[in-house]
Length: 116
View 1 (cartoon, one colour):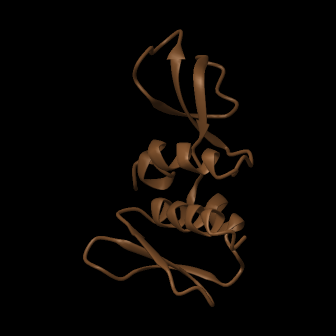
View 2 (cartoon, rainbow, N blue to C red):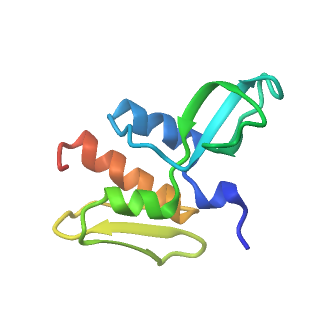
């Protein structure tokens, strides 16, 4: 089974998604600061009350990102250890080591270029 960090978009991409206006709620969050960790970023479930975070970003899953992409999109393994995300009628594609990151990068590209 894959680690949770491989099933959600990276913290860096989570921050970029906010910058381009993706604010939809996610089941998981990236958080830091609070009663358990000041500087360390951790992934937690939205309803996890075991600790509070001062700085939070959505940690979108592969499925959540897929729902936000246009219907005619696909993510597949193509290169060595990488995933490729393509959208029908768009010449651009995005490559990343995880499927979630490939989808997040494509969503950012589409938003930045006003294609969605």
